[in-house]
Image (cartoon, rainbow, N blue to C red; front, top):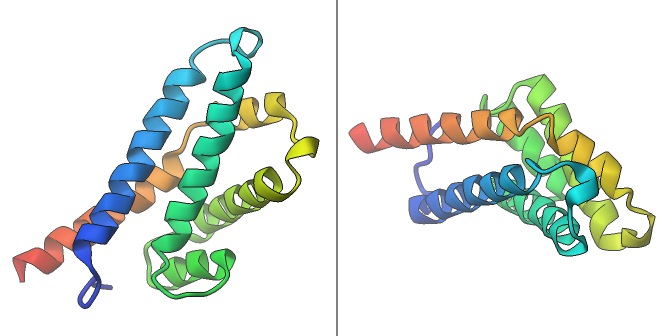
Length: 136
């Protein structure tokens, strides 16, 4: 896959946003759950929304968010397992946005402690594709 015809500055900006938010969430979640303030819990929620929105924007096509991830998978930028994990993140984003009153912050906290390796793997692959396209 290549990024020809795609605004590379836009893709780079999205990747930078995702990495920045992941770093912020990892920093916040380094504290034990019981020590998190309400503002920090909301920051984690919002960060997940930002990551999910940026991931779906990487799908390039104006399709439902889950479809955008499948486009990335079908183009070899996500493994099947990574795609499944990121689909769960998109569903969590939907829960946070549309049913925020049912959210269990402790459960979110425990899930983010598992780290963001699938998202970071995707960003690494996108950077490699971008670097390859620039060298041609």
